[in-house]
Length: 154
Image (cartoon, rainbow, N blue to C red; front, side, top):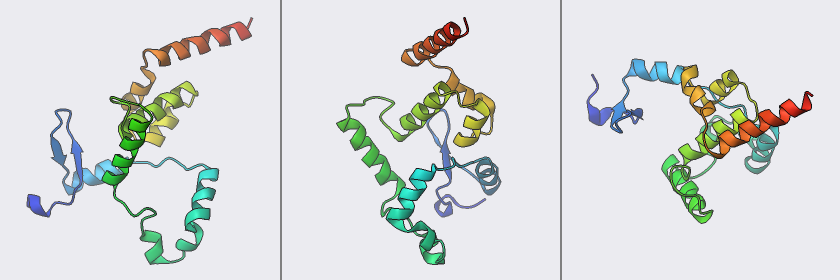
């Protein structure tokens, strides 16, 4: 077993909130299930225009370089600041809240759960199905969509 001070920060959080460090086998299993969301063409075009991505891919050093000069934690703070300025508070006001909002919006946009599962990188459909279990305004929007679709079939 690798001593804790030599472990790279490959960690997850247990439901209890405690940090769980992954061993090499667990890392392989977790990251093998991780998928990426295919970026939109307009977004990729804008990023290419701003950062010359196509040219950067020809140079190994530039291909591995970061697009932004800050780490994940700084990005989290930036998102939090923007959410605060937009007066979004509570659990939605964080990157995880954005991810959840994306999942719920995808369900409302009729994206099939198996596609959403792949986009979010979930290994199990039961995890993805959480996004289909909506309440409040999201549930009302789904009910309204159902009633509107029923009226069109008359």
